Image (cartoon, rainbow, N blue to C red; front, side, top):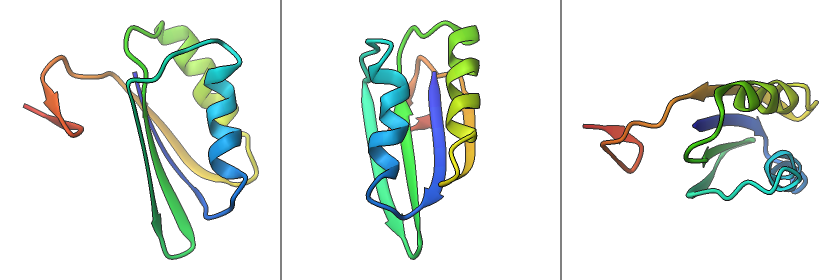
Length: 85
């Protein structure tokens, strides 16, 4: 599964977002975090994550006061740098 998150650029955002995955002992295949002005865009990829668990996690991420948006999508089996082929 892929999580695309946009949040306020704050030093606590990345640890708080990652905490939802770490507490469940989930191993990420990709983490990207980029600053744009007052925002941070975060991409997290977790292969073979159960869709129901992924939905629960994304809802928890959305409930963070620092998170503006969190979107969940399925990973393509054929992608390069997040671009579906």
